[in-house]
Image 1 (cartoon, rainbow, N blue to C red):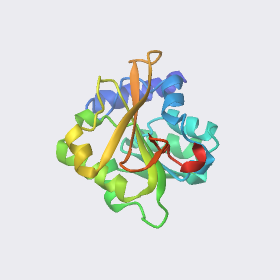
Image 2 (image 1 turned 90 degrees about the vertical axis):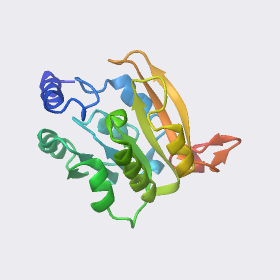
Image 3 (image 1 turned 135 degrees about the vertical axis):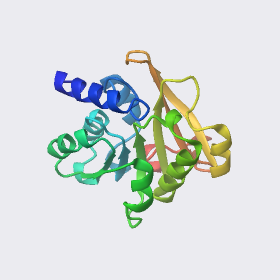
Length: 205
């Protein structure tokens, strides 16, 4: 990770500390954990809040082509960087909740959503809209991946129940700053041998 990326992230955090999850980009171990269940058959993938593209590069390393990635980023400073690094990806500038609602077509369902958004800082109504919009564009066996620095899933249990979702903690990395956990959020009823189906379908079992 370059010093220039760290500086861009720090400046963005200083402008909007409640909209940026951390003062530094996520580390490679968190990126590996966020994407470890994903593979080429997990495409297409929607990434929310890619920042400087740490998770995006990890998705590429898992074999997911840039053309199968849609990146939604609010911070204008990150947009030219993302378009230069991932020229074949679709890069959309705007608030993730708003872009999900109005800017993304329904014709090809996403098989995974990878979120770098600071969900605990969102208003409850905005979080509800975001989850609803993502579910509206997520394949039936797809999943929403979210990291958190807190002790529990950042989507409240009552909201999970209201949407018919389950959240499973798939791992924790202490070798990130700050230490983080990753949750897979998926629809109830999709299981393999009693376990939730990873994004990309039953071929991953």
